[in-house]
Length: 463
Image (cartoon, rainbow, N blue to C red; front, side, top):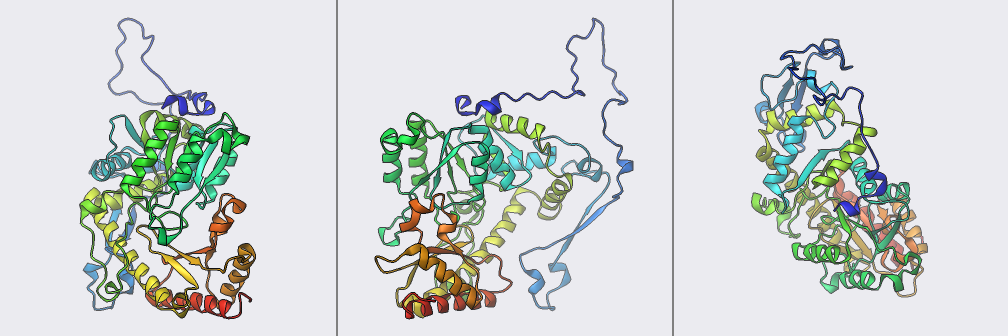
């Protein structure tokens, strides 16, 4: 693993003026059992203006929309955060607002390890976690730890494009990997494995501009891929891992939607709601967002970088996350129970959106097809343009039609690593059911979207 860490990351050294050890102590020296610190610049908590924090926590998503008849006890539950906590599992104000450990305040850092062990333990012992300031910041550090200037990184051809800024910042080069979006092919994994395998086996021939510089990393969103919504099966992930071993590159898996696995769409579940997965099934695919998990050497290198730039994440945020989980949900299992409630709502909303897309005239006329997502919050609508269509021009024109109908969607080509490379596969739009206030809003948005598509095709692909 060490040989894949960037030269820039390996060269960093952390040396703090307040660091002290017993190295070089004179003979007979004994440390004082209760030293008084005039060395650390850590203000006493008496200077902090906050005495306590009171938080009211929901027991399930959208409970505020429930009828007034629902008892108050079934709704929000208070969490009180004091200046000093008697419970060692809680983070108090005196600790949370103080300078802290870079990997995370110990209580929250422990939770990140506990949930990984409970949900998805790595198959090796030398692993570690660190809390980041957020998913984007964590990704930037993951890119920094592996990529030097001139290095090459593979990405799914349609992806979460802010990652390209982190790659550019490192001076590295992104190379897109073709996706198979043909639903009729039966491929639900997204990545065109044959294309990827052939690309790596014949790298110098197929990528002469990078001759002698094979990819050092592969960035992938394996669950609920953004923007396509596709999810890789376990067997497929093993095949990708085998390629990584063969060609000596690291896999950077971005997993914001591993919690939100979804069952296949069933029209019958629109009225009854989808069943909750058994916990064991749900836990097969999990990594906590905003937490970096990996080989101990990699995490140590990221922590060193954090020590020089951001240091520790927001103490107030860590207080709220940790104490809500511990006091309200009762730890790991209670938190996973909350996630299952989220998943149930996501599945219902997905079903509402898909139902109205499938029932539309535009779908019945075969103007578009759909990808039924198995995780996450995105549905891809694949527009079936006639052969010979100027896809880029018509996608732009159709986007104006959506605006006129009052519905916001994202063009697939806008999320392409290289629009020219992906043009023939970029005729799709990303829809999400996450921001809507109600199911009725999703229904109306689907109506506007399908009406716009229908009119666009009826007018011969004209506005």
